[in-house]
Length: 261
Image (cartoon, rainbow, N blue to C red; front, side):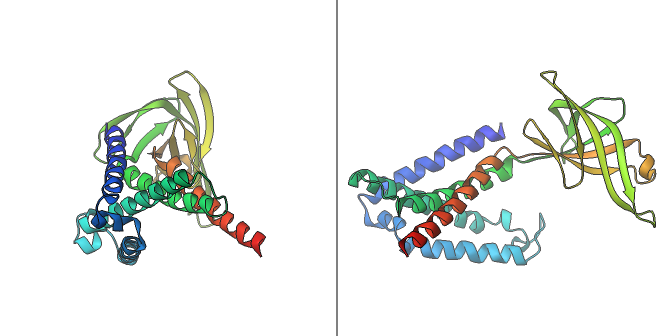
C-alpha cells in the first residue's frame, strides 16, 4: 500500500513540475525556476544541509539538528532541488523539439546528468519510506516463511527458508572470524534454490536481499539456528539507474572534450 502511495506521489510531483513550467511561460516569477538564479542557491543549500547531516550524529527522536530526516527544511530543500531539476530538464527537451535537432555533443551529457540526478534523488527519497528491514530465525529441518519487522509484526514472504548448515570460522583465541549459513529456499512457484549467505555477502531472491545477521552466541559453532536480516528496497534499481546515467554523462563529456582537442 505504501508503495502505491509513493507512486501516486511521484505522478503528483511530475504534475507539479509540468504546472510550474506552464506558469513559467506566462509569469516571470515562475520563469526564474528554470535559471541559474534558482538552481545555484537551492543546490548550495542542499549541499550545506547534507554536509551538516553527515558531520553531526543522527538519531531518531532527537533534536532537529540530530534528526535531519524529520526536519522539514531538509525535505523542502530536496523538493525544491527536484522541482528545479525537473523544470530544467523539461525546458531543455522543449528547446530540442522547437529546434528539431538533437545535438549529441551538448544535449546528451546535459540530459544524462540532469535526468540521472533527478531519478537518483527521487527514487532514493521515495525508497526511504518503502524499504523493508525484516528479521527471521531459521533452523535445520524446518521451513520458515514469516519474517518480522521492527514493530514485531509478521510479514509473509514469497519464499520459505530452511537452514541446512551453520558455518563458523574462529581465530586462535576462539573469537568469531566468519559466520555464515547454507540455506535452502522454496519459492511460492515451487522453485528450490540454495545459497550461502554471509554478513556482507547476501543472497538475492524475489527482490529481497538476505544477509547473515546473528546466531546462538552461547553455542558458537554448534548453534542450531541462524538469524537472517532480509531487506527489500523496490526503488533501488531506479537509484542505480540514475547513478549510471550520471556516470555515463560525465564519461560522454570527457570523450567529447578529448575528441575536440
